[in-house]
Image 1 (cartoon, rainbow, N blue to C red):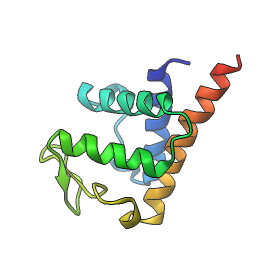
Image 2 (image 1 turned 30 degrees about the vertical axis):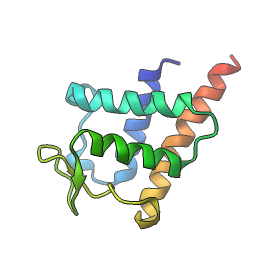
Image 3 (image 1 turned 135 degrees about the horizontal axis):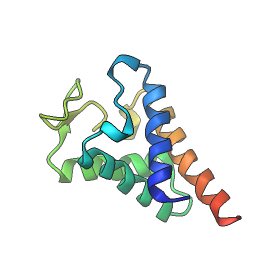
Length: 116
């Protein structure tokens, strides 16, 4: 399975787990920059054997900060602010679970591909 295909699956599952159906944007309508971010994150997880959700979250936060993003209580892509740019320990249980699911999807699809 291609990295982009895994990214699409991760995106769709993440959107569904977010619970805000009215604000969901389909993959095809996402700005290229956002699609590329998902692809890059999947590629990163795919390349690191046995990565934990915490390790991936720390990488994700660093990537965001390196690209000018900052913490805010509300997400705003235009202002480059996000409520999850915080230490792992400060994440809500739901946010930790979302990261676990994301990492698990990548690992399962990577491992199934390796055995085909």
